Image 1 (cartoon, rainbow, N blue to C red):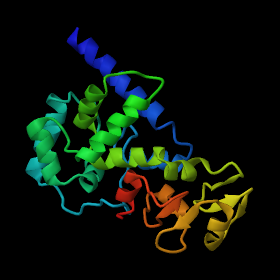
Image 2 (tube, rainbow, N blue to C red):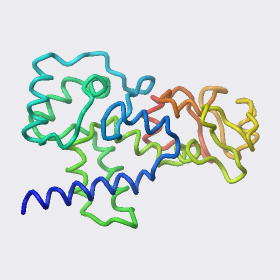
Image 3 (tube, one colour):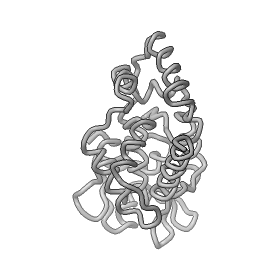
Image 4 (cartoon, rainbow, N blue to C red):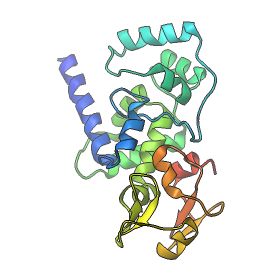
Length: 228
């Protein structure tokens, strides 16, 4: 019975991710997530706000693999070379010690808000948070939340007047490329934070072109990705 219940909970959490972060239309983003989790959820953050260079020790990797095989029962197939770029050895040690990846409080709050606001699937938000923290490190969840924010929606889906990022990561209007310096003229409320640049490079996991939409506020996940 307990095993069956865990399977049901896993399906619930999987569906939450599908519906909260509605199926990304760009194949390159999907491929990027596959670099971190073989089941398709994490990104390598090669150019993002976290790209750790400290490699885990062989002993830590051995203990992590044992933990994943025994405690986690191999429910998540990690790509360890990419996972080491997302999580520090200290974060991995905390997972092994407590059973949870460490998330900052602001990230827990954002995640609970997204689960609570979901109109399709209802599950106890605190339970959903606890389960997610057993599987996903904070960098993976931060990026998922970012794509669901207003800045991510612009990059993924474009505007009502057919301005959007192309599969080649350039911004276009009706199929014609827009010069980066002209983007604020074409998108009402759009402004650059650090000067003219190509916002679509975020689709290639390059988070070096921050911008604002509508007002001075930038959503919290993008503040983290843009290192603001």
